[in-house]
Length: 308
Image 1: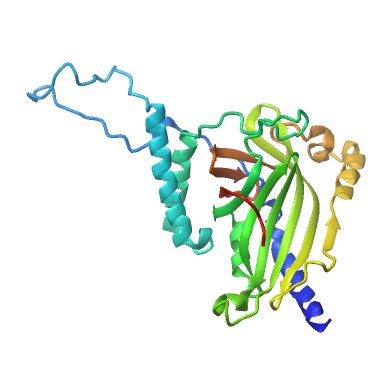
Image 2: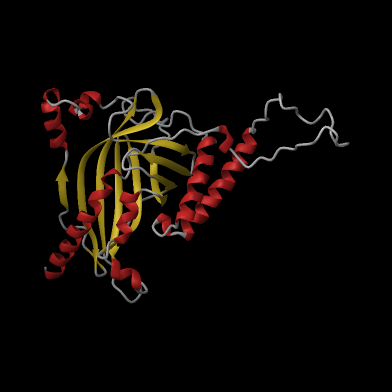
């Protein structure tokens, strides 16, 4: 019992640290240009050059557009570079300014060759369609979002695996596993493992006027001890907080408080209503999103499960 109480103390500490991460999936999109597509090089020649011929495109000719095959080759190379950065800089937790700039440049180029249109289709879960591009289990490999990166500064708990689970739309669950910071200092064979799982449940919805934007309403937070000093403790009751009552209160007073109508349920489908993320890139293995506030990008890869 003493150990469990101590673990709950660590859990509460982690919950305090987790609080800034409330917007783990709340992104917003920036404008992208075709010029960021690739590093395509074009031939230039002087008119006096003997090698100059009619085959050289003039200034009035349109630039050739990459083919579907070239798009695939470009995206494959960009994804490889992003994966290398993620492995080298601990998913962004140990990223240098130069690494963040390089990652942002890679993501900009990936966004320009995004193969998925209307990525938010089916996310409302109303039509029971199998055509839901976002339906999957996604594990984070990179982030530049300060609210998540700052979790790595906690002296008590270190962030382990981070997931976004969208297997049953419109429910989207954000999962962050925490392990004791001291556990990261020693070989796994010498320190009994402990793990705390934090789950943030949200309800996703599409947004009118933006086919790649997904709105989110927070419904609850749960802290569940999974393992303590090598022993499974997932049968212990979790610490849960229901957040739906807050929305009900907002709906009741929204008509009386100027500006609060943007947070009510009636305006949740508006394109700029608070609480959303934009899909910047999505294919059958990689998802990149930009959160609305406090800003930042997330790159996630598709996985089979989210077992601790």
